[in-house]
Length: 253
Image (cartoon, helix red, strand yellow):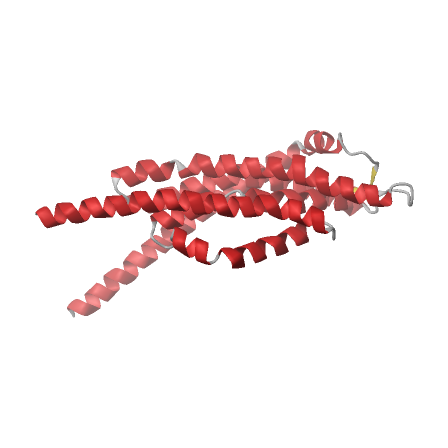
């Protein structure tokens, strides 16, 4: 009977945790929906800002093209606002299981996630997008009439910027997983060659079929991975030092 009660209690705990996590995700979805609505409301201002520096005329082929552009605009603003809010909700979810020091340190991840996400968007938009776009325009210079649809151009921007926004989170993710003991710097160094291969493949997917340009796109991804190893090493050394101090305290007792 005692074991049955224990199993029932564990089931209740899991059910409560899942219910709490579901509530956090639902709140974040509401924030995304509201942010999407704000982006859709200011769609014209955002569209004019993005289209202002386009060196060619944007066209539409069907009435639905411009609708998809507005959806992309709303989605981008929704992601920018929801990412840090979701991170904060996840922090609130794990907060009861953390010590006071761990709560203070882990809370710093929330603004860091937002800052790195924005930096990734900026890097993808102002650097990688211009590199890829200028390369493509140079290929067709004087050969064909350049005509780009609004839908395809905004999809192109989405394809370039969003991956880099998430790639910029890699060092932070590495730090967090290292603090939990899930990965170590040694593991990341051991898998470096496989990671490089994957990053180069991603670079080829994000850029035109030009070897030099593919390397230029892959280079910041590789840099982020190396930075993740360094940050993981810092967290790992602090974690090991803390464990050693704890073991000494237990031996003294």
